[in-house]
Amino acid sequence: MMDSLPDVHESEETRGEALDVSVSGLYRKLEIPEKFGGTQFVDAEITVSVNLASNKRGTHMSRISARVEGMALLTGESVVGLAKGISQDLDETVTTVYASFDYAMPMDSPITKSKGTSRVRVTMACLYNAYGDSTPNICHGLLVKVPIFTVCPCALACSGGKFSHTQRCMVTVKLIHNGGVLPSNFDWIEDVSANVESVGVPLYSVLKRPDEVEVIRRGFENPMFVEDVARDVFSVMVQRFPQRSIHVIAESEESIHQHNAMAEAFSVGVYKPLFSGFGGF
Image 1: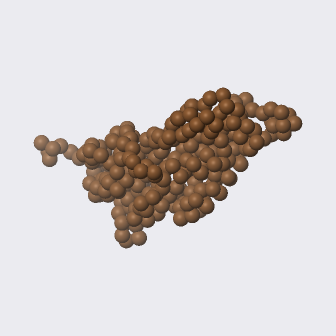
Image 2 (image 1 turned 180 degrees about the vertical axis):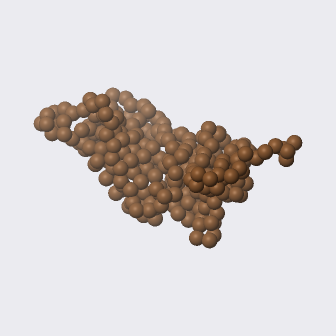
Image 3 (image 1 turned 90 degrees about the vertical axis):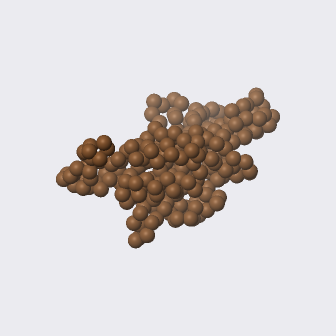
């Protein structure tokens, strides 16, 4: 019966515009190795993006869903195979798979050493280009969102160092590896998070009163504009990940202003032309 039904997706397209087309809201279990041993199994939201040729009206989204649903468990290695398989199923040149999830790490409070958990939002991306430089090209991306605490240096200076307003700053770090072979340690989520937190003051899930005093003290001893955060995090990431293209975005939820404040820094590299922005990347 399927053979007798029209394939409208393959009908002639004359408007001449190539598109990025995606399917989102798919979910699969993802296996993530931890830096210090062990494994986390996370529930990842999967988004798949394909480049649709200008002469095709639409893509076969059901084939994308079928491929994802056919994967019982995803790993960093199998995501590459998933992207390649979808590209072959659809006969499209470029396919990108995004997997977004929450990642948990143990985190003790600074003074009382109370046990807690740090959670960051992570997106892993894999781009498969079937005809890159005449041979298949694979590009890997890692996005980690890390919240920190900052103190406004302007208000602190204007008050003679007596008081200031504070804000929660969300720092987004994107690391790009342009190459077919993914390094075994690309890239530890723990390292990205720790390097961001080394610039500002981390947020904690459990704080006793001595811990709160210490966190506030650290913030007031190192007041930062959002511009300071973006520059300092970018500098740290360049030193820690010299072989990566890097994109850093810092966004502060201002406590006494109605607006948020943002700053970004990025290396000259492969991020903007390769990743479309689907999947939260």
